[in-house]
Image 1 (tube, helix red, strand yellow):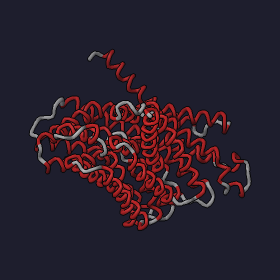
Image 2 (cartoon, one colour):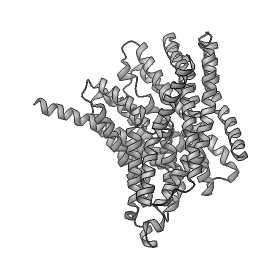
Image 3 (cartoon, rainbow over the protein chains, first blue to last red):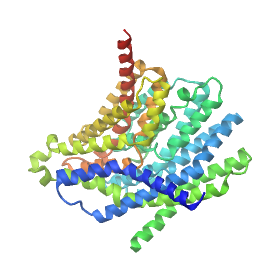
Image 4 (cartoon, rainbow over the protein chains, first blue to last red):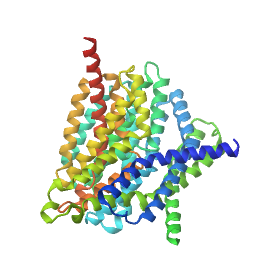
Length: 245
Length: 255
């Protein structure tokens, strides 16, 4: 690859990161000029921050596509073909766990949650770090477990909706037991876990498995892993709340 | 400026720690289980450096831009002088209508532009054999998320318990599941997770937390979270509903 085409690729990635932000910028600018009619506070710092977000996202996604995604996909495929159930389970768990621990949205939410909880006097000020890390470990563990269950489902051909409805019932049950202060965060944890890193790798695993196993259709059985990965964290974070508060 | 550098160095260190598990996983599986050398090692290493640097920059920018934007918008739109009022209007949920509109617009615009939703819409079109129109689906989901966030901010303002809304949502999903075309169920469940992107999550979370600390009588620890939960539940209902609607339309045309 020569430098000119490399430059073009970088521009393209930058543009992709910009388009992620454009809808938000448009809405905020509209509100600031038409509705609030006042200059935006701390505008300089925010613009600098937005530039960091754009460059950061671009590098992050470019790096994932260069290294992690191809390896993750080929490994999922190789393991599915190898046919060792034990290693497939270990890999599935580790994949869910390790991608969730590095998930940017989860890092952000865990930190915010620890600040809010210590502000409300629910935890000690010096326990903030432990609380945030514990939260991330809990979510990562539950996503790992979710992927294992999801992979087992694909292997055995269990119907997805019974498992999901069972999960919903568990969420309802936990809601009754769990402390009030954790419920909102726990429900949010479901949506937070499945963004930049986890979705592509996990989808690749599901589709790869459904392709390799006889009698499974990638379109029908390959999906559903993300659904588990959004459901189990809710249950586990509520349990985490029981432990802390 | 030195502040930024110490911040960045610290974040860089934490990021390295965060990315380490993925690295260990891939290297150990490749060497011990699959017993093969890592393909394109040089590319992978460069990619890894990009990931760490990019994540660190993103997290730094997040604290300087995304969180503040959500919080500032919440505090501006719930400011007594903006609402133009005295104490009694601050507790009236109708005074906060700009917040609902803002939340709905953020929900709609970010969802319509979300790349993973586009991918899901195209796949849904394939699976359904053309019954599901990709654009129709994207607009349906975007309206679903817009409504979800408006309802979510309304919930924060009124302080009604989150679980009631979510339970009702679950019951709707369960009922829909029995009537929806079986082929599309897994896809619909997955679409709940894909609508909340890395950029949207922090802004929406900060909006909820800022709003709950601005409205009198609300506690951020109890009322602040929950917006993302709304935004992950409504797309499922929207996708299931859309496929049911398209199926019904098809049947009516046939008769």
